[in-house]
Image (cartoon, rainbow, N blue to C red):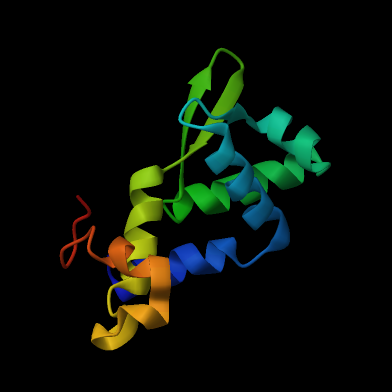
Length: 115
């Protein structure tokens, strides 16, 4: 992951509605949810939710697909892991007690690719 990719993902998450939508989709699993369901669940107007979901998708944190008339969204777990690994790759400077349980996460990725 590059610095620019990380900044884009973090900027997309830096809004309450988008963060809540992303966390909802992480919990929903790989089958995702329809945009209208997400809007209802979070009590956000559907057009505003569509705007936020598109922002998260452009940042690479979500994937979408059409199912009839509905658009389904799911978290991109690979990209989420890349972001988390990027944020923790230099964690602890050799002192695992500083980062606790985050240290093993950094070991999941090489310089650019998550395992």
